[in-house]
Length: 290
Image 1: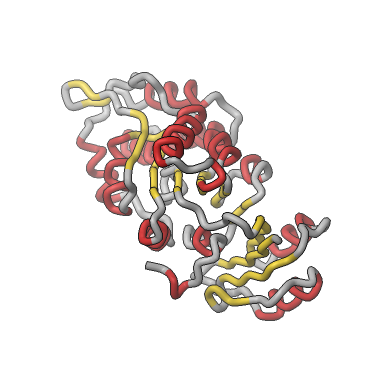
Image 2: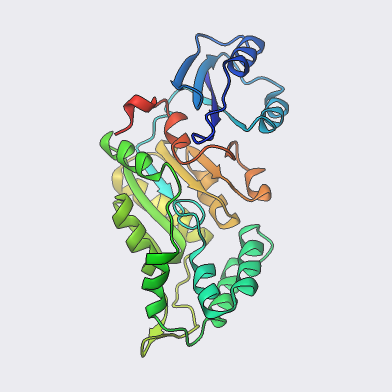
């Protein structure tokens, strides 16, 4: 048995009854139910339809996401999340660079790295080099003035934790930011790179080892082993090429507002919904949110 979930941006709430009825009828689904009127609905089917991705493409034009996944085991016991452009709406290194006056140059490197066009470690080293000498006080300024949380994140963490899940934040960014984000959202632990600071200024040199794609996979393996759960019981979410390893290893790998080259390699693609979509695809209705 498989579950079909239709999702819209909660701010738009534009998932229409006719859209649900049309797909439900075409795919001969079992009884449909609204998880949140106008935002999320689901129904069960016997097998994955051959035209799944053609339908997915058509729904994109309506501002609707489509997820098809096995019914068994879809409610997960662990969340492993990327930070930049996933749990928060910014790339922290880009914000530091903007303050330093090299924002455009660093942002261009970030975009290429997240799209898989550049080696992550090399791209990180190059970007940090452009921040050499920047006052470390800027970190607190960026946190206070520039960071905003991705909608749905608080609901996601509170609800999964209330239902016994373990939540870990694993970022190719920096602990100076993951510590703050983890504390505010309620993550059980966080892992990231360390910003080199001497005499109150950024050294511009990465502190090794650099946490990249393989470190995220390692985090999934280590934490799930420690908890005594299978990889299939993990939901991972991210948007960049360095997230693909953990997205593929997890039982549910969610490409959230991801780069096209990244989303194309994932079966769960959320382009319109927010982080609350990760609850809906696990079968939580809005009234179940903690």
